[in-house]
Amino acid sequence: MRLDFTNVDLKNINNYEEKAMDAFKTLIDGSGEGNDFLGWIDRPNNYDKEEFERIKKTAAKIQSDSEVLVSVGIGGSYLGIKATEFALDKYFNSDRKVKIVYAGNNISGEYMADLLDYLKDKDFSVNVISKSGTTTEPAIAFRFLKEALEEKYGKEEAKGRIYATTDKNKGALKDLASSEGYQTFVVPDDIGGRFSVISAVGLLPLAASGINIDEFIAGFAEGREIYTKEDFENEAIKYAAVRNMLYEDDKDIEVFVNYEPKLQYIAEWWKQLFGESEGKDGKGIFPVSINNSTDLHSLGQMIQDGRRNLFETVIEIENAKKDIEIKETADNLDGLNFLAGKTMNYVNKQAMEGTTIAHVGGNVPNIRIILDEVSAKSIGKLYYFFEIAVGVSGYMLGVNPFNQPGVEEYKAQMFKLLGKPGY
Ligand code: PA5
Image (cartoon, rainbow, N blue to C red; front, side):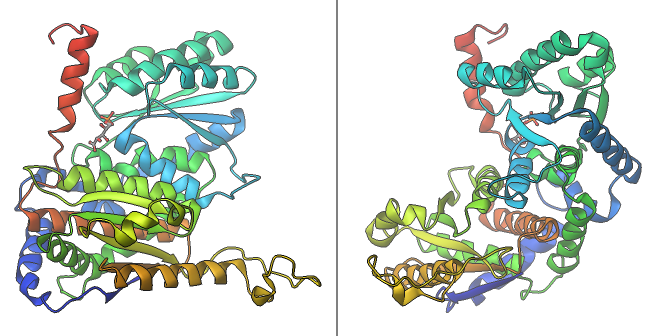
C-alpha cells in the first residue's frame, strides 16, 4: 500500500510538518484529549489471545449449526463488519461459510418484518453487539430476534445460539447476557466504537463468515509497524497534514472514491471514522463517498463543475482477483472493437485516470491510495492507516478525535417524543 500526492499542490506542505509531527507525538505518547481511548494503537500486538481462540471455536460452532448469522449492531458495531465481509466476498455466488445478515442498524419495521420472515426456514444464530449495551436500535432488533430464536429452538437451545459482544462489566446488554447465560465477548474499555473492528466486535462475525482473522490482525500489525514511525514520510502523518492543508484552503469536503463496488462499505466505515472523529466544535472536513464509474453519471457533474470546496481521496486496487477480456465482434455494431483485446479492468483504470485528469483540471485536488490487492491483510492494514491518520488529523484540527458528544442529541429528542421516562 502506498499514497500518491502528485495531484495535490504541496508547495505549502512544509508549513504543516511541525504541527503534524506534534499531533502525531500527542497521539502516540497518549498526552492528548481522549487518551483513554487509545487501546487500538497497540491492540494488533497485545490482543487477548485466549478470547481470540474462543472466537475461532465459536465461529466453528456457528458454522456447524447455522446457515445465517444475524449481526446486530450500529455505527462502530456494524460498519467494520459489513465493510470487511462485503469487500472480501464474491459479487455473486457468495463463498461465505455462514451468510451474515444485519439488524439493529436501522429502525425500519418493514426491514425487521422481512428479516424475520427470511429467517423462518433458516438455521440461524445471533451476535448482538453493543459497546455501551444501551443503544436503542440494536436493543429493539435483539428483542425481536431473541423471541424468534426462542420460538424456533426453545429457550435453552436459543441461549446457545446467542452471542453478546459488549462491555466487560456494565450496560443493559451485559446484564441481560449474565442473567440469561449467553456467551459473551468483550469490547475493550479503551477502544471506541469506530476503532473496534479489530476487537471481538469484528472478529467473531468475520471469523464465522469464513474470513481468516489471523490475516486480518496481521494486516493491522503490519500497519502498526509502518504507521507509528515518527517521520514525516510516514504516509498516515502526511495524509493528515495534506487534509489539514486543504481544509485551511477552504476544501472542507473530502470525497472518498472507489472504482471497485466491493469497497463501497469501506467508504461507509471511513465516513464514520472521520465524521465522528473530526466533526465537532464547529469544525471538520465533511466526509462523503462516491462509487465510480456509477456516480460519474450522477455526482460527477457536481465534482467537476460545482462549488470548489472539495478534494478527493481515490482508492486504486493494483491487482484485482479477476478480470475479463473484451472480444472483437465481426460486425462491430456497438463500435467497441477499438477495445478488443483490452480487459474491463484496463478500461476501469483508464476511467480512473481520465477522471483524475478532469477533476484535477477542475481544481479538485486528488490524493491516491494504492492497494496491492483486496485481502483480509490489506484491509486490516488500510484500517490501521486511517485510524492513525484520523488521530493525527483530529489533533491538528484542535478537536478531541476520540469522543462523539453530538451523537447524543438526536437520542434525547427521539426519547422525548417516544415518552421514555426521564426525557
Ligand atoms: O463510534 C461510536 O462510538 C458510535 O458511533 C457507536 O459505534 C454507535 O453509537 C454504537 O454504539 P454501541 O456499540 O454502544 O451500541
